[in-house]
Length: 534
Ligand code: TXA
Ligand code: MG
Image 1: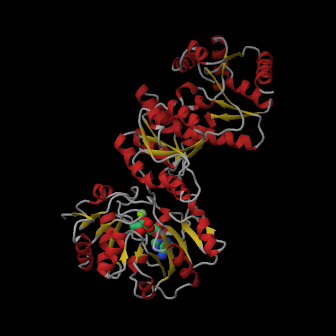
Image 2 (image 1 turned 135 degrees about the vertical axis):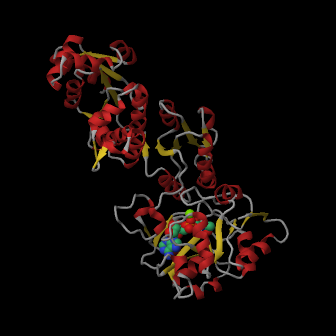
Image 3 (image 1 turned 180 degrees about the horizontal axis):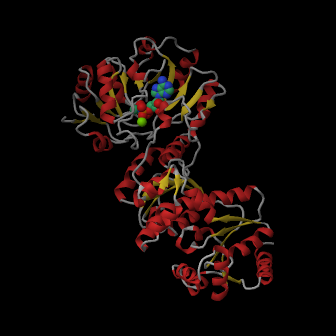
């Protein structure tokens, strides 16, 4: 299909769009929030074309766009009293209201629900096209399903050129995130999706409203969402996105500690501090962040980076919508670098007696984040499972359980394979480690210790005030490992030679604890704790 590209200011552009819509065609149009992919809401065949063009799941209903209040009456079975108050205050504008539908609205629009979503956009081009077509227009965001919503005609063209009949280019969208969706079917009204109108603004008109938990959290397994759109992966660039909480200096240290090609998604003026960066608005300015977030997510993929770390947005007003979209694009991965207790690292070669020393720290009020234990958690994460299966074959999981021995065999076959294992697991282990430290904080620990044999190969060092290294003479280590794991001295030596040498560990650490004599090691821990923590 040849997609017609028209500038909104060209004479007759709106008329051409309206004509196509009346013929049952699909046309991308600008709105103040994001571009919409419109079709005649009363023509099921036309609406089906929207789903086809976007690759949208059939069970995700569409919003019906109107230009005046009179157009609503035939679409709903009753007009709730609150609608008039909302309309007076926020329409035309970035608000969508869910009401009971009438028989006139085809099932394909509402995905079989008995409710319909209605919105009156304020963008002059959208309004003109609705008026000239004299139709209610069903229109989801004009992106390929799963991609960030389009805020320019170019975004639409990148996703859908050749799949739709026309694009009307009305420049960049002002709001930048999709409309707020509120359901008036329930009492109190339920906010299903934050957007251009904030919950506070809504409460001024409606009184108390409820915010659906799906706004901030993953749906429970098997849960049926009030808004079907909530259950799909959304707004995702190809890069793996993680949201990072914490001030700029911490963000910077965290990114500098990364071992992989990463893209910093940061605020205006911060990009120059990173090798690869995309900026998404001024710090402290929610509206500016909203306006630029989707374009920024698209730019991340142009950098080719596999990982993107995003500065945490300001969450007031429309910022709540930015936060909600980022959470989804990050598949709910958030790392909080703001620790209220000091964090230290503990490392050492195999058999040096790290666990004994960690225990001594625990006895002195430290919370221990053991990365060996967390690594076992990490391999249960669906994203990690998918990555590991991709690298090492799906048969390393048997009936949902990881065959650790088989994985070790394949992953330690070469340094390249080991690097792939680390790539798949380290980011998740890091996230779990930081999450664990926050648990320790809540439990009242006075400090945290990250127990990690390969701490220098990870990004964990960036939060550590100091790194403590445990050492022991080689004969002693061989004896301990043989005793602990019941393996031969030869096997022990092979395992040891896979690690960096003692000189490497010592030169990268701040404090050395010699662990030949357990009592002496305990004393050293007590001395360290006294000096570090008042
Ligand atoms: O700003 C916007 O709302 C943009 C522009 C184009 O108007 N449109 C938009 O549409 O974002 P879409 O399809 O990408 O998102 C519509 C959301 C989905 O999450 C959908 O599940 C929800 O609204 N929705 C639609 N009808 C619904 C209904 N009857 N009940 C509950 N949720 C509904
Ligand atoms: Mg959408």
